[in-house]
Image (cartoon, rainbow, N blue to C red; front, side, top):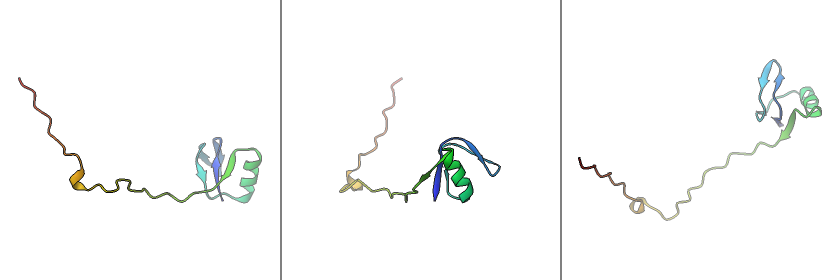
Length: 73
């Protein structure tokens, strides 16, 4: 199970900052840190794939890039 760190702490000699997610932690450390509310259990969601929302558009319908006009001297 994964845990999110609520407050900065030292874990096995390493500094862990708040809002980091810890995946590997011993059961003993987890119960003691849960008791003093330094960590909280969290579910790790699978990353969501990006959806192409440009339905029906093709290269022909894209706006054309136009060169900027040069200023007169």
